[in-house]
Amino acid sequence: MLQAQTQHVFSHQHGQYSHAAAAAAAAVDASWIQQQQQQQQQQQQQQQQQQQQQQQQQQQQQQQQKQQQQQQQSQQPHPQSSLAAQQHAQAQAAVAAAAVAQHQHYSRIALSNNNSNPAATGAGANNQVTSSGGDSVSVAAVGAAAAANGNMDGGISEENRRVLVWVAELMDPARREAALMELSKKREQVPELALIIWHSFGVMTSLLQEIISVYPLLNPSQLTAAASNRVCNALALLQCVASHNETRTLFLNAHIPLFLYPFLNTTSKSRPFEYLRLTSLGVIGALVKNDSSDVINFLLTTEIIPLCLRIMETGSELSKTVAIFIVQKILLDDIGLAYICATYERFYAVGTVLSNMVTQLVEQQTVRLLKHVVRCFLRLSDNNRAREALRQCLPEPLRDATFSSVLRDDAATKRCLAQLLINLSDNVVDGAATGTTL
Image (cartoon, rainbow, N blue to C red; front, top):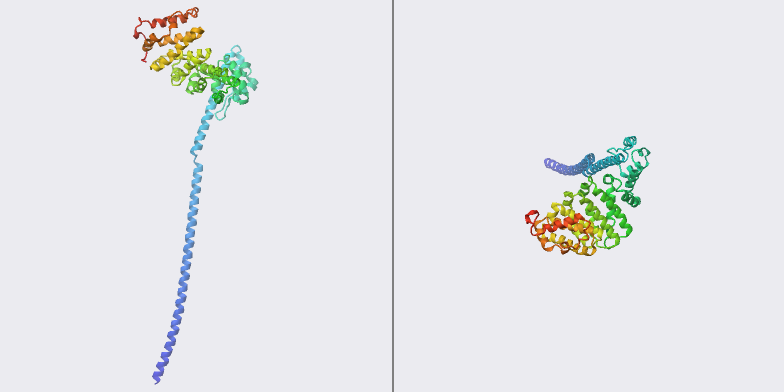
């Protein structure tokens, strides 16, 4: 019985112990789980912090890279800025070269007009203005210096000094009209004016601005006498440039004659338009006057022949004279003759206009036009096929004595007409003259 009680007590204590152990184990488990959860949360927080730190580091690295790239770009020259710098340097060099050329031409004027005063010439040469490569020298500054600097009075005459001032005033729109008028009057008196105009910075641009400014007045016809006179003064200066041996090629290379063609293409017979056409023809006439093949080659690439032919039919006597002079100069060049006689259409166009002029001259009896017509027909007769065609279509008044009284005092034109009739006679062999086929 004691054993049973002992067992019961032990069993009861064992039950109490087992319940306590279970409770303790449960408490331990709960605390461990809580600790584990806290550790996990801490680990997650640490991971998040690490990720945030990594992101911040990446952002900082990216910002540093951008800053480095920007610094590198700022240190390296930009292509456009580099190109602009090169263009600016070229422009400065061109201005400096133009300034040097100006002073050379001014010195020529001084030497040509003051040879009788060597001391004055030497003083003027010693007082020449030079320009540095980095400074922009404008013609206005040079002209103003020529006008204001008393030290230059000994090297340049008063008249030429005024010319330089007028050239400088071409850059000023407010003074340009008066300067154009004065320079157009003096263009025959200053041999180096063409060089001064061409090499003076911005002056040619100012002249072209004057020409372009009247384009809107051509169609419809709104050109006034004042506007016509002003642009014709600018054209007179262009004619001066076109006539000079040293500027003619530069004038052609710049294709400046093309700016005149809108004036030649007008048909209004009012005095402002007629004056404008005549002055424009004068510029082209100045180009062909020196019998340059380069000039003829250039003109043949343009519409100058059709423009001249229309003026030869409908223009005034002076305009007709200059227009046929241009056509005659083109024909006198071998390339020009070959071009006109290359096709029947070209020959027919020229021959028809010349024949119509002969018909008009029967009534007008103008020797100035007649001599050019005869010389054009004579030159056409140098081409084999053109000569054959002229035997059939030469105007009858040139065959008979219609113009004998007009040519009584013009021996040269009479000889040309006689030679033309000889060339067209049946006794002339076609191979006697060379030329291209029609």
